[in-house]
Image (cartoon, rainbow, N blue to C red; front, side, top):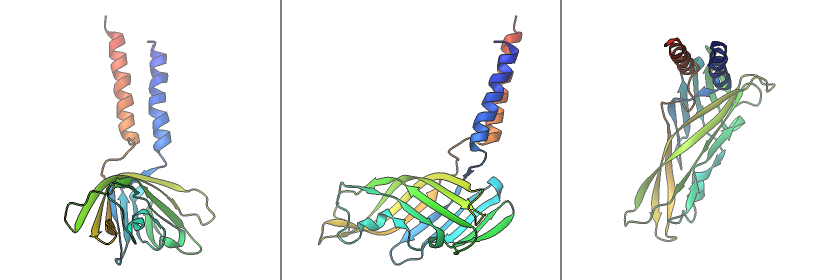
Length: 211
């Protein structure tokens, strides 16, 4: 391969993925706690741009709540989805060294969306059970009240849900859920991609110089 071709290939490797991931903040720590009759809280962080969001949860869309009333029948697939935004997500966000209050009628705002699914287990004679399942997370923080310059958020982890058995309807009633973020980012950081591209370039040049 000609040296110019190697250089073009390496520039492509370095620039395209880095550009695609540069604006997305990957959440690498934190949790969401949600339950019936309990305070619901979101507390998530990322070292990228010093990002931290701490917020309460009010209203929203909550898949686990579908397991109230008659409960969820054993063997049925259910949604993990929890989604909040606007006035339903009051709290504080820190990014780039500045803190913003979110959740008001005017001012900066945010939205969050957890997705995934789980299957209601069979009844084994115990009155309570726990279920764990992976989730994906997406969100947006916008410090501009006019809606410009949104900052996308992403992440993943494991949700742990707790249920109690109701003999009357033979189903599982939702009690509490905790969504814990994984520490590894879903997309490589620009620095990782830089090292990869540099290694490929160096290896190709060494191969070319061999007699």
